[in-house]
Amino acid sequence: MKNNLSKPAIIRIANVFSTILNDFNKEEFIFQTLSGIDELELKQRVSHIIHILNTHLPNDFYMTSQILLQVKENWDWGEPDDSYNSFAAWPIIDYVSIYGIEYPEISLEVLKNLTCLFSAEFAIRPFIVKYPEYCLSQFKLWINDEDEHVRRLVSEGTRPRLPWGLQLKQFIKDPTPNLPLLDHLKMDKSLYVRRSVANHLNDIAKDNADVVINTCKTWCKSVSKNKELQWLVKHATRTLIKAGHKDAFSLLGYTQDPKIKVSNINLSHNKVEMGKEVSFEFELNSDSDKQQNLVIDYALHFIKANGQQSAKVFKLKTLFLARNETCLLSKKHSFKAISTRKYYIGEHKIEIFINGVSVKTKSFDLV
Image (cartoon, rainbow, N blue to C red; front, side, top):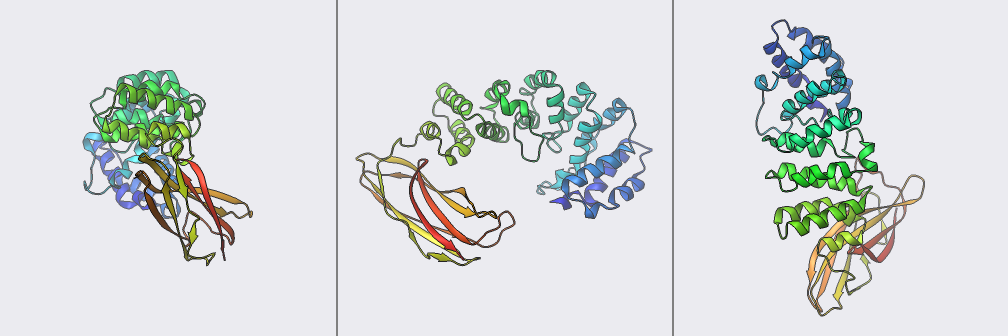
């Protein structure tokens, strides 16, 4: 991903500023920016480009802001089917969060203008921390903006735990100031915006589960049987479902206290070689005279470097089980090396969950 901020992106940045500014030294900017960039990771490249760009722009931020406000109309949008072509705008937008932090009014105007090039969700967060009341007053206006990128920025920019972004500790502690904004955006005509609302609620759920449950209940009562809202609520509660939160299952219409008999778990191997895979299967038998709506998950209890076990929950199947019906479920899990997890030999465990409740476990050894 870091290669999306390499020579082609830097040339695009140089081109836009040389178009706006007659005295912008395009060749020097490209040379300075490319110097040493190959050794840098993605976010280091962003910082590096910002630093070099600052040496080529006015020291007066108001003057620079007027230049930045001309970027969009002169921007090379690249190939429409290239999902990474927007990365070139990232350093331009994050420039504002560093050199415009003392000028919230003009900086937010610039971020609003540029967010359609590359989301300003990272750049706006220092302003939310430093100027919460002013930002909130602007967001109340932005939720009605005609540009979906601006409306999405309200939701995405205020997420408490945005990946890669500055954590907004005030909203981790108390997310309620954002709820009126999300309420307004929940039925937005853009899926791009609604997905952000769902992700925002999923963030909140990690620290304030009851807030999310109560919010979703209120929304579902006010807008009944709307497919878009049902999708949003399901997406917003995915962390709660994985965590087995009982009220989340009820909210999504899954059967409370299902009547199920579960067979023992059958494993393909009791000893699994490192790099190989294990298969497991088990049988569900309905013990009810009614259809039951079920979410079947499984957890793998891995061995960590310190020898302790740590569980990770995986989705298995969502299904309706008819009265007295039997269903056989199976799954394979690979222990091939991956970049995000290192495996260690020792006893592992598979655990089956039905609607968030643990029903069966089975141990095996990774050797």
